[in-house]
Image (tube, rainbow, N blue to C red; front, top):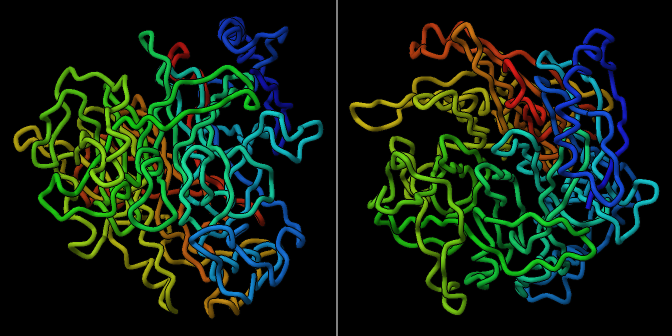
Length: 566
């Protein structure tokens, strides 16, 4: 089904010169729109133009009534084996940002919110914005196609282009705005009775074209947790979606539906409206286990707690940067077999992208786990989180070429005491890491980490945000940059690369995922490996989220990579 969203101008409109130059492209673009237009729909004027960026943004619906002080949470917790939080109930109402102090009381706390896709120039000028259909839109019913995010879930709504570059993909929840704890709810097809959140909501992948038309595909994957990123593989006759995320919010052992619904999935895109979709069991495309490294098994499924997702040279790459299980590092899916007999290795030359789900015995998977076909990229950290102090928190991944990959590290997010700012400023791995491949040793090596201009640990002011100390945490409200999350980049003709990134934060707020954050950019000399040269490069802030806003993903616009001359 096609859902057409009205263009909503926010900030500067397209200049007359830019608009005229882009109109010349619309003939070819209109032809592509026919793939989405059906049931009597006609292609509209393009909303996104090649060479610009798209930033995903979420806005909290700031209503005190969203939460009642004393309300027992999570929703319907009394009906679950997981039970309820303390009988005192929620300490704060729905007023932003105080509402997220409820996270201290309810570990699953979150509230669904609207998703906006903002088109901006590479220099940061806002051109226009599209609002993803949601329950607050006029005419949207409970049976209408819609998608939301969880406002404080910092790892959500990453943006990726399809493998042919024509479509933008991201993930969310099929739920109304202002629903509580949806990000830790079960999916209808994978119920975990020990999950304290007594709700059920499908996750879904959104695919959007240049005209702002959407298709949504529901999934039962990521029960108890969140889907974070998606990429549509529609090249060379393929038509399926790769996703990354996490599953499980209950006790160990986890049900089979939770185990198979974790990590990275392969999903067939659907054309039917959400109201007519009936997704089956999740279909995992890969899995990793610390036993591949000779370590003792972790909680099954939690080794596959992935956040970043990218495709390069027909290889699917993932990152893991949180949780006490598994390894915080960069991975790839081995579609040939034998690429990493001891858990680490390199993709086999000529390997193809995965096209089918891995096989498993549903009756035993909760105890045995999935077949291990995901490997740690050689040279990246390979020590299990339980075996050493964790210092790596990788998130976004962007390959500049076959020998250079940039990895965003979001920092450790430690806001446990009054040293939160000085601790963030002292981190040496947070920021943008540049890894270079050594053909002699067949390993990737960290060249340097770019931090200058990020001002790690330096608190900044948000208009309308509370001043002073948050009484609930005893720490200052003001956010400070802690590292980077999602990224995208471009190789320039002068031998440099420019990388755009979304910042992570640290603060005394009840949930740092609710902090207004920033979009930043930096230009790096592609062939450089000298830390002295790198020290002269710096980040510049292009955009700052306002009160009640967060920035999440960044990508080039649909059609950018296929535009002539790009």
